[in-house]
Length: 335
Image (cartoon, rainbow, N blue to C red; front, side, top):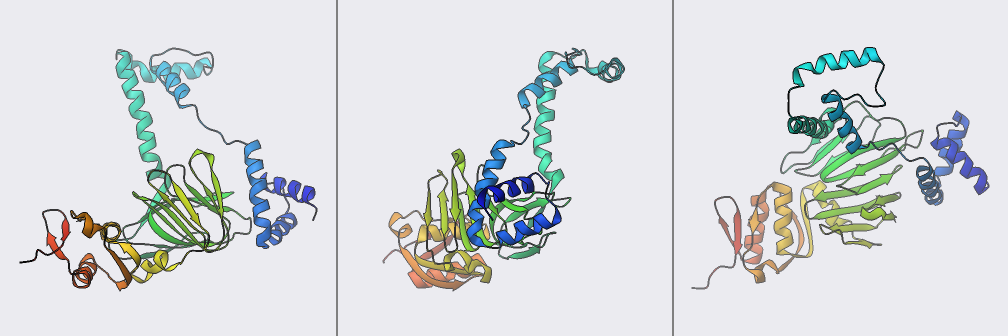
């Protein structure tokens, strides 16, 4: 199909104006991976021309304060409505302005705090174990230890499926009949957008990571940056926002956790300590810089922190000391 015709068909598809036959045509066209870059290009163009509504929080706050103070705005409701609202607010009219502002701020803050609790439910994994889930539309998710995924409490809407990840998970995304996008939020201004694919996502305090196993992925990054990933690509971003995209990465370091194993490839001991904390919520400190910079390689089975600590103790001849609220690794003193 010629590009201008396909572009118009996709725009009608995004607008929800296509027939069942046209949607089937789009689905068959998307089955060819070579067309997915074109799909995303037109999707970006369509979204730019159809911006989503963004509430004006400042204006809403001012309007809320005016209503609390009993001030009628130029956009007020009919008189009957004003009487009802003012009657409800009579007990509060003696409050000072700063109390009105405090009440307004409290209400708005409460809305933000409870919004996710109302709209989303948590899928979780306990410390030291993985957990598998199947979402309502068929997508399968395996959560690594100490991870949480927020999913819509009342099911996915039309057009897109959005979830929020804190921790690490493997996704096997189902391709829906209407080609609904699947979006994984992995922190502020970081999004993974796919149609149907398989990938591993990581979102913790030390940074973000995405390893793509199959299909294609579009990453949305801070400052409006975007990246497109292909199978075997690895995206890594540290907590400062600096990132790197590796074209051909070894999958073992990013998928070993599914078998409750740790895969180290010349890995710094300081990085091993971070992984123990992320996996088992155990704080590990290494005061000696030389020891922290020692490296380890190999694959090790560990279902709890003690398993891995024992391996490190025997393999690297280091001393493990339990402190009040953390574990310290050190080099044994020579007599």
